[in-house]
Amino acid sequence: MIEAVRKKTCAILETIGDYVSLVVDVFVSIGKHPPSWSLIRDQLYYIGVMSLAVVAITGFTTGFVLAAQSFYQLGEKGMAGVTGVLVAKAMITELGPILTAFMVTGRVGAAMCAELGSMKVTEQIDALHSMAIHPHAYLVAPRFIAGLFMIPLLTIFSILMGIFGGYLIAVTLFHMTPIAYFDPMHLHITYFDVITGCIKSFIFGALLVTVCCYRGMRTSGGAAGVGQATTQCVVTSYVLILVADFLLTMGMNMIRRFLW
Image (cartoon, rainbow, N blue to C red; front, side, top):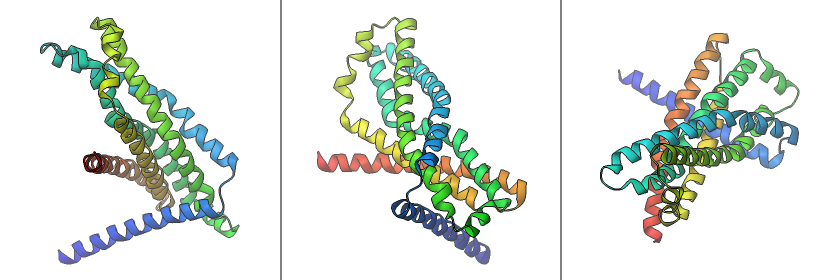
């Protein structure tokens, strides 16, 4: 048992070290030899534009649910006027960044891992090495840069769609006035909430792109290995996003209390 635990611990530490090495290598390659604009443009379109529909639907329906739950739970207590604040605050600080990262991971991250995994098992990545092309600079760096730019923008879009969805439900179904929905927001939503959502979206974007690319670049075992790597990258990304969300929430609120 001790030997099995030792081997498992060594394997986990080796995986973490290998992942950190890939991330550092990507940063170094971006600094020394930035990828061409054409590669970045294609990834910007694939990650950002192609994900608009699923992000819009997710944010919109989440706003529906938040508005309905807030109104039903608080309306009996005479606090229905805070429905808009609850929807906006939840979308900005938590649900917007997390749900956007989850949707992009399921739609884009899994495809990245499968694409890179297929290239790995068919020895296309080895062919890049033979042509003196660094795979991290050619394959990972454009996806990383595009993810850092597009995922925060998708998060903002998801937040706006969630607030708009909550507005439609509150006004049409619960007969709230637009002023009652929007007016309390500027009093209770602070710059700290907006900064928190932006920082989370950047961190989540970096995590999901690097994890999915790492699993794809380390795929082995043929077609079955590609399927296993794709499943592992999605599950690992989800877990890391949730852990990072907790750590960022605690850390940023501790910093806020220390400064203010």
